[in-house]
Amino acid sequence: MKKMLPESELARDERFVRTNIEDRLFDPRGPKVAQRNTGPARMGVDRPAAGERSRSLMHGIFVGEIQALEGAGRTCYDFDDETAPFQLKLDMARQCWDESRHCEISVKLGDHMGAEIGEYTESTFLFAAACNPDPVLRLCGVNRALEGLAIDVFNSMKDFGNESGDPVLEFCEDWMLADEVTHVKMGSDWLRRLTATDPERRERALEFQRTVDAIFNLGGFRGEDDENPIQLARNFRRLAGFTDDENDSLAALARESTVQAREMAEAASAALHASAQGS
Amino acid sequence: MTTITVTPNPFTLVPYDVEEITALLEEAAALAGISSGVDISLTVDEELFAPLTGHMSDVVDGRVVLWISGGNFEDNKRPCHFSADQARVDLSVMMLRAKDRLSDDFAAAPPDAQLSRGERAAWDTYAVGRAGRLGLDMRRPRQLYDFRLQHGFTDVADAAFERCWEAEHVTWEGIREICKETGAADRGPSKVPVDLLRQK
Image (cartoon, rainbow over all chains, first blue to last red; front, side, top):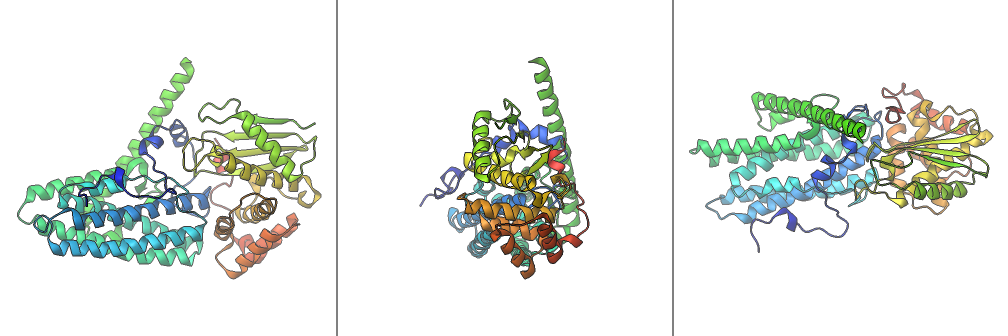
Protein backbone atom coordinates (compact mmCIF):
# COMPACT_ATOMS: atom_id res chain seq x y z
CA MET A 1 0.00 0.00 0.00
CA LYS A 2 1.20 3.48 -0.85
CA LYS A 3 2.62 5.67 1.90
CA MET A 4 2.13 9.47 2.09
CA LEU A 5 -1.06 9.64 0.06
CA PRO A 6 -1.59 13.07 -1.57
CA GLU A 7 -5.00 14.72 -1.18
CA SER A 8 -5.67 14.28 -4.90
CA GLU A 9 -5.81 10.50 -4.35
CA LEU A 10 -8.42 10.44 -1.61
CA ALA A 11 -11.16 7.94 -2.44
CA ARG A 12 -14.65 9.33 -2.94
CA ASP A 13 -17.74 8.03 -4.71
CA GLU A 14 -19.61 9.89 -7.44
CA ARG A 15 -21.71 11.90 -4.97
CA PHE A 16 -18.76 14.02 -3.87
CA VAL A 17 -17.60 17.07 -5.79
CA ARG A 18 -14.30 18.66 -4.90
CA THR A 19 -13.75 22.39 -4.99
CA ASN A 20 -10.71 24.61 -4.67
CA ILE A 21 -10.54 27.39 -2.13
CA GLU A 22 -9.47 29.61 -5.06
CA ASP A 23 -12.96 29.24 -6.59
CA ARG A 24 -14.38 31.19 -3.68
CA LEU A 25 -11.43 33.56 -3.25
CA PHE A 26 -11.60 34.75 -6.85
CA ASP A 27 -15.39 34.84 -7.08
CA PRO A 28 -16.22 38.42 -8.20
CA ARG A 29 -19.24 38.42 -5.88
CA GLY A 30 -17.07 37.98 -2.77
CA PRO A 31 -15.93 41.60 -2.44
CA LYS A 32 -19.45 42.85 -3.14
CA VAL A 33 -20.98 40.71 -0.41
CA ALA A 34 -18.19 41.62 2.01
CA GLN A 35 -19.29 45.25 1.69
CA ARG A 36 -22.87 44.42 2.61
CA ASN A 37 -24.57 43.71 5.89
CA THR A 38 -25.70 40.11 5.60
CA GLY A 39 -26.48 39.86 9.28
CA PRO A 40 -24.53 38.26 12.09
CA ALA A 41 -22.28 35.49 10.84
CA ARG A 42 -22.65 33.85 14.25
CA MET A 43 -25.20 31.05 14.03
CA GLY A 44 -28.71 31.91 15.15
CA VAL A 45 -32.32 31.34 14.13
CA ASP A 46 -32.81 35.04 13.44
CA ARG A 47 -30.06 35.39 10.89
CA PRO A 48 -30.95 35.28 7.19
CA ALA A 49 -30.97 31.84 5.55
CA ALA A 50 -30.39 30.21 8.96
CA GLY A 51 -31.45 26.75 7.78
CA GLU A 52 -29.41 26.75 4.59
CA ARG A 53 -26.32 28.12 6.29
CA SER A 54 -26.59 25.44 8.97
CA ARG A 55 -26.95 22.67 6.40
CA SER A 56 -23.98 23.93 4.45
CA LEU A 57 -21.82 24.11 7.60
CA MET A 58 -23.02 20.65 8.72
CA HIS A 59 -21.93 19.20 5.38
CA GLY A 60 -18.55 20.92 5.80
CA ILE A 61 -18.22 19.27 9.21
CA PHE A 62 -19.15 15.89 7.73
CA VAL A 63 -16.45 16.00 5.02
CA GLY A 64 -14.03 17.35 7.64
CA GLU A 65 -14.69 14.25 9.75
CA ILE A 66 -13.99 12.00 6.78
CA GLN A 67 -10.67 13.75 6.22
CA ALA A 68 -9.80 13.63 9.93
CA LEU A 69 -10.42 9.86 9.81
CA GLU A 70 -8.21 9.57 6.74
CA GLY A 71 -5.50 11.71 8.35
CA ALA A 72 -5.38 9.70 11.59
CA GLY A 73 -5.47 6.47 9.58
CA ARG A 74 -2.53 7.59 7.45
CA THR A 75 -0.51 8.41 10.59
CA CYS A 76 -0.98 4.81 11.78
CA TYR A 77 0.43 3.55 8.50
CA ASP A 78 2.84 6.15 7.07
CA PHE A 79 5.60 5.89 9.68
CA ASP A 80 7.74 3.09 11.09
CA ASP A 81 7.82 2.52 14.85
CA GLU A 82 11.04 4.48 15.25
CA THR A 83 9.67 7.64 13.66
CA ALA A 84 6.31 7.29 15.39
CA PRO A 85 6.09 5.06 18.51
CA PHE A 86 3.58 2.23 18.52
CA GLN A 87 1.67 3.90 21.40
CA LEU A 88 1.22 6.98 19.25
CA LYS A 89 -0.27 4.79 16.53
CA LEU A 90 -2.60 3.23 19.10
CA ASP A 91 -3.83 6.72 19.97
CA MET A 92 -4.34 7.41 16.27
CA ALA A 93 -6.25 4.13 15.91
CA ARG A 94 -8.53 5.19 18.74
CA GLN A 95 -8.97 8.54 17.01
CA CYS A 96 -9.95 6.70 13.81
CA TRP A 97 -12.73 5.00 15.74
CA ASP A 98 -13.90 8.37 17.11
CA GLU A 99 -13.79 10.02 13.69
CA SER A 100 -15.73 7.12 12.14
CA ARG A 101 -18.41 7.63 14.75
CA HIS A 102 -18.39 11.37 14.06
CA CYS A 103 -18.88 10.67 10.34
CA GLU A 104 -21.93 8.55 11.16
CA ILE A 105 -23.30 11.18 13.54
CA SER A 106 -22.70 13.95 10.98
CA VAL A 107 -24.58 12.01 8.31
CA LYS A 108 -27.51 11.60 10.67
CA LEU A 109 -27.40 15.27 11.66
CA GLY A 110 -27.37 16.14 7.95
CA ASP A 111 -30.50 14.01 7.51
CA HIS A 112 -32.05 15.75 10.50
CA MET A 113 -31.41 19.14 8.89
CA GLY A 114 -32.51 18.07 5.43
CA ALA A 115 -29.09 17.94 3.77
CA GLU A 116 -27.89 15.15 1.50
CA ILE A 117 -24.44 13.61 1.20
CA GLY A 118 -22.55 15.40 -1.56
CA GLU A 119 -25.10 18.20 -1.82
CA TYR A 120 -22.34 20.73 -1.25
CA THR A 121 -18.78 20.75 -2.48
CA GLU A 122 -15.84 19.36 -0.54
CA SER A 123 -12.59 21.17 0.01
CA THR A 124 -9.71 18.92 1.02
CA PHE A 125 -7.32 21.40 2.54
CA LEU A 126 -7.98 19.86 5.96
CA PHE A 127 -6.40 16.61 4.77
CA ALA A 128 -3.53 18.61 3.27
CA ALA A 129 -2.46 19.48 6.83
CA ALA A 130 -2.29 15.75 7.53
CA CYS A 131 0.25 15.15 4.77
CA ASN A 132 3.32 16.50 6.56
CA PRO A 133 6.16 13.96 6.43
CA ASP A 134 7.22 14.71 10.03
CA PRO A 135 4.80 13.00 12.47
CA VAL A 136 5.31 15.73 15.08
CA LEU A 137 4.40 18.49 12.63
CA ARG A 138 1.49 16.40 11.39
CA LEU A 139 0.18 15.92 14.93
CA CYS A 140 0.54 19.63 15.64
CA GLY A 141 -1.28 20.55 12.43
CA VAL A 142 -4.04 17.99 12.85
CA ASN A 143 -4.47 17.30 16.57
CA ARG A 144 -3.73 20.75 17.91
CA ALA A 145 -4.75 23.13 15.12
CA LEU A 146 -7.56 21.24 13.37
CA GLU A 147 -8.96 19.36 16.33
CA GLY A 148 -8.75 22.67 18.22
CA LEU A 149 -10.83 24.17 15.44
CA ALA A 150 -13.23 21.24 15.82
CA ILE A 151 -13.68 22.23 19.48
CA ASP A 152 -14.66 25.73 18.36
CA VAL A 153 -16.99 24.42 15.62
CA PHE A 154 -18.75 21.86 17.81
CA ASN A 155 -19.16 24.31 20.64
CA SER A 156 -20.71 26.85 18.22
CA MET A 157 -23.05 24.18 16.85
CA LYS A 158 -23.95 23.06 20.36
CA ASP A 159 -24.82 26.66 21.29
CA PHE A 160 -26.92 26.91 18.14
CA GLY A 161 -28.75 23.69 19.08
CA ASN A 162 -29.40 25.13 22.52
CA GLU A 163 -30.62 28.48 21.17
CA SER A 164 -32.90 26.92 18.57
CA GLY A 165 -34.24 24.37 21.07
CA ASP A 166 -32.93 21.49 18.96
CA PRO A 167 -32.11 18.73 21.46
CA VAL A 168 -30.71 16.38 18.80
CA LEU A 169 -28.11 18.85 17.58
CA GLU A 170 -27.15 20.00 21.06
CA PHE A 171 -26.74 16.45 22.39
CA CYS A 172 -24.74 15.13 19.42
CA GLU A 173 -22.40 18.12 19.32
CA ASP A 174 -21.76 17.84 23.05
CA TRP A 175 -20.66 14.22 22.72
CA MET A 176 -18.42 14.92 19.74
CA LEU A 177 -16.95 17.90 21.54
CA ALA A 178 -15.81 15.60 24.37
CA ASP A 179 -13.88 13.46 21.87
CA GLU A 180 -12.21 16.50 20.31
CA VAL A 181 -10.89 17.60 23.70
CA THR A 182 -9.22 14.18 23.98
CA HIS A 183 -7.76 14.43 20.47
CA VAL A 184 -6.16 17.79 21.25
CA LYS A 185 -4.71 16.40 24.47
CA MET A 186 -3.19 13.51 22.51
CA GLY A 187 -1.53 16.01 20.16
CA SER A 188 -0.19 18.09 23.04
CA ASP A 189 1.14 15.00 24.90
CA TRP A 190 2.93 13.59 21.87
CA LEU A 191 4.36 16.97 20.96
CA ARG A 192 5.94 17.18 24.42
CA ARG A 193 7.18 13.60 24.43
CA LEU A 194 8.66 13.50 20.94
CA THR A 195 10.37 16.87 21.19
CA ALA A 196 11.56 16.66 24.81
CA THR A 197 15.17 16.80 23.68
CA ASP A 198 14.71 18.72 20.45
CA PRO A 199 13.45 22.28 21.06
CA GLU A 200 14.05 23.27 17.42
CA ARG A 201 11.75 20.55 16.16
CA ARG A 202 9.15 21.61 18.73
CA GLU A 203 9.34 25.20 17.50
CA ARG A 204 8.99 24.04 13.87
CA ALA A 205 5.92 22.03 14.86
CA LEU A 206 4.36 24.96 16.70
CA GLU A 207 5.07 27.19 13.73
CA PHE A 208 3.32 24.69 11.47
CA GLN A 209 0.37 24.71 13.88
CA ARG A 210 0.22 28.52 13.67
CA THR A 211 0.21 28.30 9.87
CA VAL A 212 -2.69 25.84 9.91
CA ASP A 213 -4.52 27.97 12.48
CA ALA A 214 -4.07 31.03 10.28
CA ILE A 215 -5.52 29.20 7.27
CA PHE A 216 -8.63 28.30 9.21
CA ASN A 217 -9.05 31.84 10.50
CA LEU A 218 -9.17 32.88 6.86
CA GLY A 219 -11.76 35.53 6.09
CA GLY A 220 -12.78 35.84 9.72
CA PHE A 221 -14.22 32.30 9.86
CA ARG A 222 -13.28 32.01 13.53
CA GLY A 223 -13.08 34.64 16.22
CA GLU A 224 -14.84 36.11 19.22
CA ASP A 225 -17.24 38.58 17.59
CA ASP A 226 -20.65 38.32 15.95
CA GLU A 227 -19.03 38.65 12.54
CA ASN A 228 -17.26 35.30 13.06
CA PRO A 229 -19.46 32.25 12.32
CA ILE A 230 -17.34 30.05 14.57
CA GLN A 231 -16.65 31.26 18.08
CA LEU A 232 -13.41 30.56 19.90
CA ALA A 233 -14.31 28.13 22.72
CA ARG A 234 -11.83 29.26 25.37
CA ASN A 235 -13.14 27.09 28.22
CA PHE A 236 -13.11 23.86 26.25
CA ARG A 237 -9.71 24.74 24.80
CA ARG A 238 -8.44 25.17 28.34
CA LEU A 239 -9.77 21.70 29.22
CA ALA A 240 -7.90 20.35 26.21
CA GLY A 241 -4.65 21.73 27.53
CA PHE A 242 -4.25 24.99 25.64
CA THR A 243 -2.81 27.69 27.89
CA ASP A 244 -4.41 31.12 28.27
CA ASP A 245 -1.44 32.57 26.38
CA GLU A 246 -2.08 30.19 23.49
CA ASN A 247 -5.78 31.10 23.46
CA ASP A 248 -4.94 34.83 23.58
CA SER A 249 -2.50 34.50 20.74
CA LEU A 250 -5.02 32.54 18.64
CA ALA A 251 -7.68 35.17 19.35
CA ALA A 252 -5.24 37.89 18.24
CA LEU A 253 -4.45 35.93 15.08
CA ALA A 254 -8.18 35.56 14.41
CA ARG A 255 -8.77 39.30 14.86
CA GLU A 256 -5.90 39.99 12.47
CA SER A 257 -7.41 37.65 9.89
CA THR A 258 -10.81 39.34 10.21
CA VAL A 259 -9.24 42.78 9.69
CA GLN A 260 -7.20 41.48 6.75
CA ALA A 261 -10.31 39.95 5.19
CA ARG A 262 -12.15 43.25 5.56
CA GLU A 263 -9.24 45.18 4.01
CA MET A 264 -8.94 42.70 1.15
CA ALA A 265 -12.67 43.00 0.46
CA GLU A 266 -12.46 46.79 0.47
CA ALA A 267 -9.46 46.76 -1.87
CA ALA A 268 -11.13 44.28 -4.24
CA SER A 269 -14.33 46.29 -4.19
CA ALA A 270 -12.41 49.50 -4.98
CA ALA A 271 -10.61 47.71 -7.83
CA LEU A 272 -13.91 46.46 -9.25
CA HIS A 273 -15.38 49.94 -8.96
CA ALA A 274 -12.35 51.51 -10.69
CA SER A 275 -12.48 48.95 -13.49
CA ALA A 276 -16.22 49.59 -13.96
CA GLN A 277 -15.52 53.34 -14.18
CA GLY A 278 -12.81 52.73 -16.75
CA SER A 279 -14.85 50.42 -18.97
CA MET B 1 -51.19 39.23 -22.09
CA THR B 2 -48.65 38.86 -19.26
CA THR B 3 -45.46 40.89 -19.22
CA ILE B 4 -42.47 39.32 -17.50
CA THR B 5 -39.49 41.45 -16.58
CA VAL B 6 -36.24 40.06 -15.21
CA THR B 7 -33.63 42.35 -13.66
CA PRO B 8 -30.69 42.65 -14.17
CA ASN B 9 -30.60 42.25 -17.90
CA PRO B 10 -27.97 41.13 -18.67
CA PHE B 11 -26.26 39.59 -15.64
CA THR B 12 -22.70 40.81 -15.22
CA LEU B 13 -21.29 38.91 -12.22
CA VAL B 14 -22.66 35.42 -12.90
CA PRO B 15 -23.33 33.70 -16.21
CA TYR B 16 -27.11 33.53 -15.73
CA ASP B 17 -29.28 33.82 -18.81
CA VAL B 18 -32.30 36.14 -18.71
CA GLU B 19 -34.18 34.22 -21.41
CA GLU B 20 -33.77 30.96 -19.56
CA ILE B 21 -34.97 32.50 -16.30
CA THR B 22 -37.93 34.13 -18.08
CA ALA B 23 -38.95 30.78 -19.56
CA LEU B 24 -38.73 29.11 -16.15
CA LEU B 25 -40.78 31.92 -14.63
CA GLU B 26 -43.48 31.50 -17.28
CA GLU B 27 -43.52 27.79 -16.56
CA ALA B 28 -43.81 28.43 -12.80
CA ALA B 29 -46.61 30.96 -13.30
CA ALA B 30 -48.55 28.45 -15.37
CA LEU B 31 -47.99 25.71 -12.81
CA ALA B 32 -49.22 27.96 -9.99
CA GLY B 33 -52.26 28.98 -12.02
CA ILE B 34 -51.50 32.69 -12.25
CA SER B 35 -54.06 34.27 -14.57
CA SER B 36 -52.78 35.64 -17.84
CA GLY B 37 -52.72 39.41 -17.79
CA VAL B 38 -51.00 39.61 -14.41
CA ASP B 39 -47.62 41.28 -14.92
CA ILE B 40 -44.63 39.77 -13.18
CA SER B 41 -41.34 41.40 -12.34
CA LEU B 42 -38.43 39.47 -10.89
CA THR B 43 -35.30 40.99 -9.41
CA VAL B 44 -32.36 38.66 -8.96
CA ASP B 45 -29.64 39.91 -6.62
CA GLU B 46 -26.64 38.57 -8.49
CA GLU B 47 -24.19 39.71 -5.82
CA LEU B 48 -25.44 37.11 -3.34
CA PHE B 49 -24.16 33.55 -3.42
CA ALA B 50 -25.10 30.31 -1.70
CA PRO B 51 -25.80 29.80 1.17
CA LEU B 52 -27.05 33.42 1.39
CA THR B 53 -30.41 32.43 -0.03
CA GLY B 54 -33.89 33.87 0.25
CA HIS B 55 -36.84 35.03 -1.81
CA MET B 56 -39.87 37.26 -1.51
CA SER B 57 -43.21 37.37 -3.28
CA ASP B 58 -45.39 40.46 -3.10
CA VAL B 59 -48.29 41.87 -5.05
CA VAL B 60 -48.21 45.61 -5.73
CA ASP B 61 -51.12 47.24 -7.58
CA GLY B 62 -52.11 43.90 -9.04
CA ARG B 63 -48.57 43.15 -10.28
CA VAL B 64 -46.51 40.26 -8.94
CA VAL B 65 -43.24 41.64 -7.62
CA LEU B 66 -40.59 39.05 -6.85
CA TRP B 67 -37.12 39.24 -5.37
CA ILE B 68 -34.65 36.39 -5.09
CA SER B 69 -31.03 35.92 -4.07
CA GLY B 70 -28.75 34.79 -6.89
CA GLY B 71 -27.64 32.08 -4.46
CA ASN B 72 -31.00 30.34 -4.90
CA PHE B 73 -30.19 29.71 -8.56
CA GLU B 74 -26.64 28.58 -7.92
CA ASP B 75 -25.63 24.98 -8.42
CA ASN B 76 -24.30 23.92 -5.01
CA LYS B 77 -21.86 21.57 -6.68
CA ARG B 78 -20.56 24.14 -9.16
CA PRO B 79 -20.22 27.60 -7.64
CA CYS B 80 -21.29 30.46 -9.98
CA HIS B 81 -23.18 28.07 -12.29
CA PHE B 82 -26.91 28.26 -12.85
CA SER B 83 -29.05 25.30 -11.79
CA ALA B 84 -32.28 25.16 -13.77
CA ASP B 85 -33.68 22.45 -11.47
CA GLN B 86 -33.14 24.56 -8.39
CA ALA B 87 -34.52 27.68 -10.11
CA ARG B 88 -37.64 25.78 -11.22
CA VAL B 89 -38.36 24.71 -7.65
CA ASP B 90 -37.84 28.12 -6.04
CA LEU B 91 -39.69 30.05 -8.75
CA SER B 92 -42.65 27.69 -8.41
CA VAL B 93 -42.81 28.19 -4.65
CA MET B 94 -42.59 31.95 -5.17
CA MET B 95 -45.39 31.89 -7.74
CA LEU B 96 -47.61 29.75 -5.51
CA ARG B 97 -47.21 32.32 -2.75
CA ALA B 98 -47.89 35.13 -5.23
CA LYS B 99 -51.06 33.28 -6.27
CA ASP B 100 -52.08 33.21 -2.60
CA ARG B 101 -51.53 36.94 -2.37
CA LEU B 102 -53.73 37.53 -5.42
CA SER B 103 -56.61 35.76 -3.67
CA ASP B 104 -58.90 37.17 -0.99
CA ASP B 105 -57.62 34.54 1.42
CA PHE B 106 -54.36 36.42 1.87
CA ALA B 107 -55.62 39.96 1.28
CA ALA B 108 -54.81 40.91 4.88
CA ALA B 109 -51.27 39.52 4.81
CA PRO B 110 -48.56 42.17 5.22
CA PRO B 111 -45.75 42.39 2.64
CA ASP B 112 -43.02 39.76 2.93
CA ALA B 113 -40.62 42.24 4.56
CA GLN B 114 -43.08 42.58 7.45
CA LEU B 115 -43.89 38.92 8.02
CA SER B 116 -42.48 37.29 11.12
CA ARG B 117 -40.09 34.40 10.57
CA GLY B 118 -42.69 32.01 12.00
CA GLU B 119 -45.41 33.23 9.63
CA ARG B 120 -43.06 32.95 6.72
CA ALA B 121 -41.96 29.41 7.63
CA ALA B 122 -45.59 28.26 7.89
CA TRP B 123 -46.56 29.90 4.59
CA ASP B 124 -43.50 28.45 2.83
CA THR B 125 -44.39 24.99 4.11
CA TYR B 126 -47.90 25.34 2.69
CA ALA B 127 -46.40 26.40 -0.69
CA VAL B 128 -43.64 23.77 -0.76
CA GLY B 129 -46.10 20.99 0.08
CA ARG B 130 -48.33 22.05 -2.82
CA ALA B 131 -45.35 22.31 -5.18
CA GLY B 132 -44.49 18.71 -4.34
CA ARG B 133 -48.00 17.55 -5.18
CA LEU B 134 -47.75 19.45 -8.47
CA GLY B 135 -44.89 17.15 -9.42
CA LEU B 136 -41.82 19.12 -8.38
CA ASP B 137 -39.00 17.42 -6.51
CA MET B 138 -39.38 18.96 -3.06
CA ARG B 139 -37.48 17.82 0.02
CA ARG B 140 -39.66 17.40 3.05
CA PRO B 141 -36.90 17.03 5.72
CA ARG B 142 -35.35 20.28 4.60
CA GLN B 143 -38.62 22.15 4.96
CA LEU B 144 -39.33 20.44 8.28
CA TYR B 145 -36.01 21.64 9.69
CA ASP B 146 -36.63 25.21 8.52
CA PHE B 147 -40.11 25.07 10.06
CA ARG B 148 -38.79 23.69 13.36
CA LEU B 149 -36.16 26.44 13.59
CA GLN B 150 -38.99 28.97 13.80
CA HIS B 151 -41.74 26.94 15.48
CA GLY B 152 -39.74 24.74 17.81
CA PHE B 153 -38.58 21.14 17.96
CA THR B 154 -41.77 19.87 19.58
CA ASP B 155 -44.61 17.48 18.80
CA VAL B 156 -47.00 20.43 18.57
CA ALA B 157 -44.77 22.09 15.95
CA ASP B 158 -44.40 18.83 14.01
CA ALA B 159 -48.17 18.33 13.95
CA ALA B 160 -48.61 21.91 12.71
CA PHE B 161 -45.99 21.29 10.03
CA GLU B 162 -47.87 18.21 8.88
CA ARG B 163 -51.06 20.21 8.49
CA CYS B 164 -49.34 23.01 6.54
CA TRP B 165 -47.56 20.50 4.31
CA GLU B 166 -50.68 18.50 3.47
CA ALA B 167 -53.10 21.42 3.24
CA GLU B 168 -54.83 22.22 -0.02
CA HIS B 169 -56.34 25.40 1.32
CA VAL B 170 -54.99 27.70 4.02
CA THR B 171 -55.82 31.35 4.64
CA TRP B 172 -53.76 34.12 6.18
CA GLU B 173 -55.81 33.71 9.35
CA GLY B 174 -54.91 30.02 9.26
CA ILE B 175 -51.21 30.86 9.13
CA ARG B 176 -51.59 33.16 12.14
CA GLU B 177 -53.49 30.47 14.04
CA ILE B 178 -50.64 28.02 13.46
CA CYS B 179 -48.15 30.55 14.85
CA LYS B 180 -50.29 30.95 17.98
CA GLU B 181 -50.58 27.20 18.39
CA THR B 182 -46.82 26.54 18.22
CA GLY B 183 -45.87 29.58 20.26
CA ALA B 184 -44.06 31.24 17.34
CA ALA B 185 -46.43 34.18 17.69
CA ASP B 186 -45.18 34.78 21.22
CA ARG B 187 -41.58 35.20 20.14
CA GLY B 188 -40.37 38.76 20.15
CA PRO B 189 -39.68 40.47 16.84
CA SER B 190 -36.63 39.23 14.97
CA LYS B 191 -33.40 40.95 16.02
CA VAL B 192 -32.32 40.88 12.40
CA PRO B 193 -34.64 42.37 9.74
CA VAL B 194 -36.24 39.58 7.73
CA ASP B 195 -35.43 41.38 4.48
CA LEU B 196 -31.82 42.10 5.43
CA LEU B 197 -30.38 40.28 2.42
CA ARG B 198 -32.55 42.39 0.17
CA GLN B 199 -31.12 45.61 1.59
CA LYS B 200 -28.02 46.89 -0.15
